Length: 152
Image 1 (tube, rainbow, N blue to C red):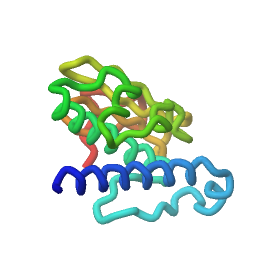
Image 2 (cartoon, rainbow, N blue to C red):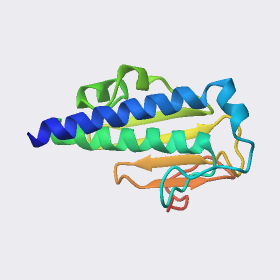
Image 3 (tube, helix red, strand yellow):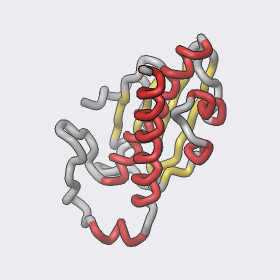
């Protein structure tokens, strides 16, 4: 019973992320929120823009899917396509084009690195980095890496 509930919520999270990403790539959505007026999506939301919120949501889904995959198969997925077998990641999410961001993923059986690079790097479009420890790091001046500050 616990597995089916967890599976249901994982699928629900994936659908919510897909809806969020499809909204942020819509030109009408871009016109609704002028720069600098980002409304946080939840208490403690570290995002500075809707684009960042979508990128961070995607990263959280990948991190969760990797944890699930590792539990199921005793190793991490080595590609985003392989994450589809985790049950919480869809084929559509494999695409590296995530609206204002591009995904870069390097996986090995014992580790992985996930980065999200904005098409325009600035204070409201920071770059993000995560690895198998699950901590997301951010940088607004250069591509984020293992030495970038952890996102709070």
